[in-house]
Length: 374
Image (cartoon, rainbow, N blue to C red; front, top):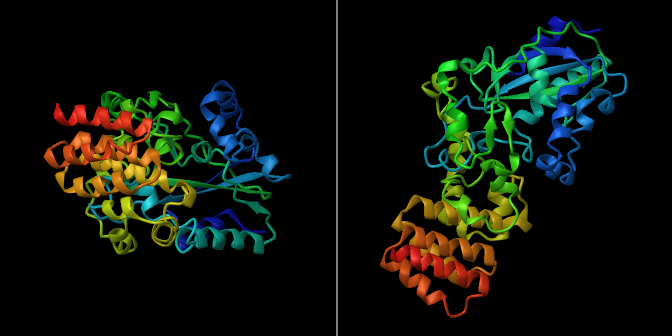
């Protein structure tokens, strides 16, 4: 049988930032939270993610005895400034489709355990952050994120990965507390522009910008468009303002060559004008929550972001999309964005689109013209 020291050494060899162990006991506190917030988390069940079942590791692996938690530091290299304001950092080098980065390392670790006869499952619906805290790897932030005790200067730029196994290992000392300093004055809570963070460790995921960018249904409500700011996909707002993350954000990091290489494909005008072929080749392999049928949502997000830049350079792109796009949600957001930017060129584009507009788009055009003129 593998010793705990051998397992730790393998994790280090594979480049994981940290590793911890906890028991395979259920997570009753998480089950209670899910029961109390059924409405807020109903979307997960519709998406095929049974979070309640995940609170009992035995439902994942009968005979489970331990949970091994690997900690991946996903923000180890600098990202292009042309991408960071628009895309959450955890998605910039995501290989869950391409399987050429983190995925093969998880597989290698899993295979290492299996070769010794250990049964192992790597489920998505286990409460990974709770498992990491129970293993003593770190503490929670008021923003509901997990902060490492040792990796990445004790920041939240880490991803806990829980593996349920039928082997028994000595568990770590739990650190299931909020580790934020009193003097932070709830920086993350007050900085959340959509009010998703409703108290320490309490979030309404339906108002989270990340959730809205890839799971939002229909045309983004008017009252959320400005607060969502420049985020096309994901959001790092609560992490960027967190004083616990300041030491890592101040680090002089080398550039991430993988992200640098794909940055040109993510320029906003290209995203607004992309077709399915472009999307499936350049975008979906890296940011996969939205598939080709959701191309409208990508374009709607981009149009909103263009409007929030207040940059006149995007007016021709928005005007062209307003005239060309078939999806009313995209055209409606293009109209709003033109109104938000304003100026003579934007007003002309809005005026020229009024004749052939549907009722939904016509309403947006009227509001946009009023905004542009104001």
